[in-house]
Length: 430
Ligand code: LLP
Image (spheres, rainbow, N blue to C red):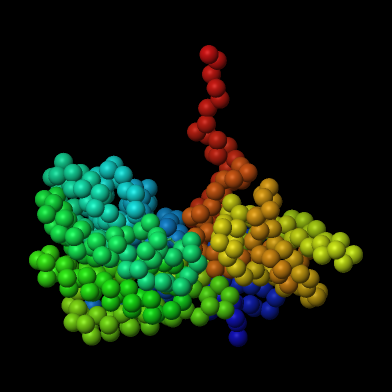
């Protein structure tokens, strides 16, 4: 019945918007706003779609935790057997704090420091996804100094167009990411010649919010071409990591289901005689995006002049670009729903935050029947919401609640203002 992104976990019961059967307006009253609320069940189901489709194959799903790195989220995935894709020493520390297993961690990123490499080697990560020959040399030196061989995969830029927003498209020649396809065989030869490294795989990541299967198949073909050349040059490759990037529904996008994507990739692997290889995925958004909402209270209504001058109606809420930056940063469209429907007819509002920037908007030209004190839900906010939040305007970051079997648990306290400047120092007298 519902066209809500996030359904079936998100649904209307009468006037009330519910997540896993819990009225969101009541959660806002109990925990305050702005508030992120996640359905653990929705996250685990999204993971299970990948795992189920990969059954019987050697595989590892490594959740790209940059999408949502809250400890309870990581803990939920770790207990379901999931690995992690990390991009910093900080993310590794989070995985370990959440009870995750370093041997299921792949370490991505275009600018790892030597200190992060040491930390990851000592923790025993599964693999470094290396993005340049210079990084191979640094990692080799770190590994030799610790007397621990570093397992490496080379991130290859397959030069395919993922057909997504330019800021989140990463697999084209003009991007900073990965080793150019034409240079990859030489880079593998170099890696194999370094005594501190052990070549274990190949990887790519072509972009984010991808809604087609074709770019993945193109990228896989380009990777397999390389695997064949590299192995012919005497360097064996164990796993193939196709990255993340599968899109979700924010409005009317219709991305393929994860199991459909997996099935087609497996079919292509088999057809090309590579069915024996271990297959890795690094999904982020598709595991958490539609499992979460951001709740915000309406503070003030500012109707525009009714004189035909084109004045806009502003609905000012207590969440802002510091809580959810995707609209401001990518002009991303995210659905906004009243938590409790009103019977009155809707007007058209720009839903904006209190931050002192015109770019601080959450949704434009939305038909809503609202009054001050109402709670709105911004949907599909489980991915790249909390992790991209900031303290701009000295705004404490939001609290987070996870619904576990339908019961709410506070998984992150709302920040206090005092904690925001706890590490700062006033100048001393000279
Ligand atoms: N692997 C690598 C190497 C990545 O760089 C990323 C995302 C992923 C996996 C996961 O991609 P996903 O499955 O989540 O699409 N902040 C942007 C998205 C940035 C994605 C960066 N890399 C947004 O809010 O749309």
